[in-house]
Length: 122
Image (cartoon, rainbow, N blue to C red; front, side, top):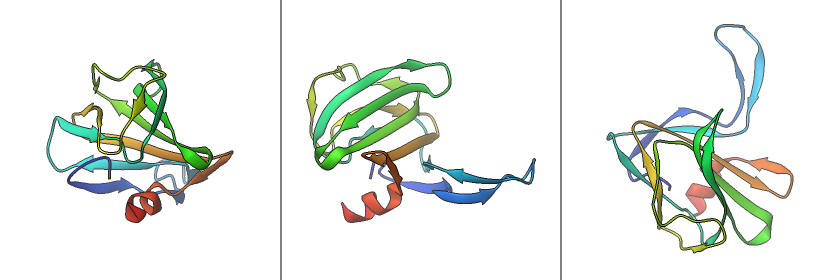
């Protein structure tokens, strides 16, 4: 798992927005760390293909893995200093830190897959 100790704040899949009462498909999970300033870890061996600040998702790291899988770590408060695009990264290596919540997304080719299924396979 990308965090040592967490609860699932928002699940993958369909949900109803409480404010607008609209049915929405959530393509990621939001994991709430049980401790603040938590370390975020890479979940599979791979290669870093994106690592920078974005306007919508704060700091983001994307790792490319075998079989067309990408893991996306978003809303990071800090990206680890050794995280550089093009570098290989091992499972368990630190990608950054979060104060509370991590947005974690997994894609395979053009499809979103439930990140909790990937975590449970690990």
